Image (cartoon, rainbow, N blue to C red; front, side):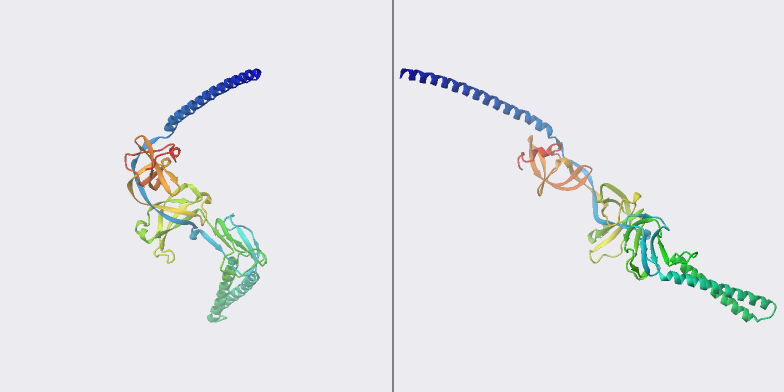
Length: 374
């Protein structure tokens, strides 16, 4: 029993000693951790305050612009719709959309019986012209010797002139068809009327073409070195748009580029479907970068006004709201604002701020969710 008591007392002493040491270590560790966390928080505060910079709200002149939805179109005066000059079968289309062609370059070939008929007509007209010319010359000789009446010579001369007219017509027909008169052939080549880009191809090899009776051309070619920007103006804005007004054009395909121009024309009647007027701006198009049917926008300068502006970095979009952080007694306070135009890295504030207030500029996003609500 004494042995057990002594043993128990010894073990109890050891146990208490170890527990005391463990409590001391835990207390020391906890104190150190708390001090470390507190020190980190104290260090982070000045770091955050340095990261967020406030700038004073200022007023600046804002250009008022009217934005018109627009599309790019090819200049009709520089566009070519290629129809076959005669009915026949399409033998081959030698270009595809996007190809650049030059004036006189062959773009398609058709096989037509009209080609053979035209060559036959030319040969007959040539024979008749030669025959009547010789007859007229003989009548002239006889008239000079008094062997025939002047009426006979006049009739022969009229017949020769008529034959020459028919020969000219036959030659012109051959030229229109584009047929080589040096060899007989039923093939008619179709050539490009000018330099341009192939926009559409409306036929394929083997199809039968009905010449000018076709509603659609075999090919459409356009010179895109100059293009049109065609926009829509609503009735309420008609007075703001006039011929000669300077404009800025943007294209969705090239968001970082702008083009300067002026309004060349304003249509004389409203479109009954859209209740808008059409305005046209002509632009040079080096390299044919701008393509027909691209979406564009026309910005018309219609004046200016003075408004409060802030750096773009100060404005934060949160769901359906737009907010800035205003300095209030040394603390950031979230404020809802209504924004307007964006100009050169700044945003117009229509309401929500007053001149002289300070807003968070750099690092404003760090305050989201941590600032006091207005």
